[in-house]
Length: 335
Image (cartoon, rainbow, N blue to C red):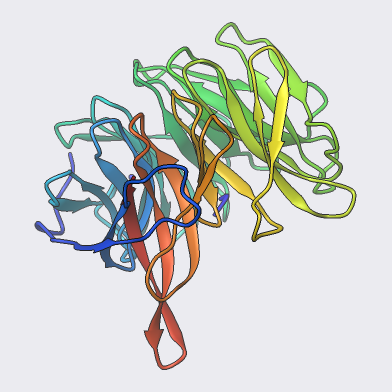
């Protein structure tokens, strides 16, 4: 899933199913609690208050408060698909919406009072599968993401609270994807030098300085996926043997790489202020190096996409629904 649109409410309060799970090789003794959200939801992010955002599977974004109230919204009252990708601690949300008639994507910001402002980056294309994609919002309300121009090339950008947009590219890149921004304005993401599907990671400082980096052993793919307030980055890389690993990069450039005992693919998606990492297939890695797995009843796949300061994780589980079919459920995992 490496993979995040005036407002109207399309849904009322929905209560969720809570299931107590026994932790797998857990470094802690407490039993985690898994809360499944309504069927077809996909949860993308969680803030420090426990508010979760994502999409409801019916073309609407959603915001779910800790009391279980789930409110859906659309960034545009038309045939469009809205996805909420990120939420800050003030309750401001950013994401994107795809207009079905044109297949062009636009960015949006939804204030804590429900007011939605959509936006397009200057230079974004208006052809099919082009446009503006909003990925991350920080404490100041600054947004980062990427846009696809008329020629199909990808560029990074940041949008200030007054609407001013600054676009940027990694030097030498044909395509640049900005993925995550911390509260100090530093951005991480990945880029391609030649559209050959060989990606490298980067970090852009608040002052605009771009540093390219690769973990030791990285060969084909290196994604920078999340950055915390201390400037610690997590991501994923693939080695010469085509095995995928997770990594953590300190601000000074030191790397820690890690794997899961039962899996040969690791996608790191989120990191909190304590350096705890969450990712796919359903894991939490603590700063000590201990790893706890996340599972859901009758689930074949678990995708963890967000984590807050308390280590509460959100994401999406693919659950067997019978008759050889599966269904998606957003989830909240409380350690």
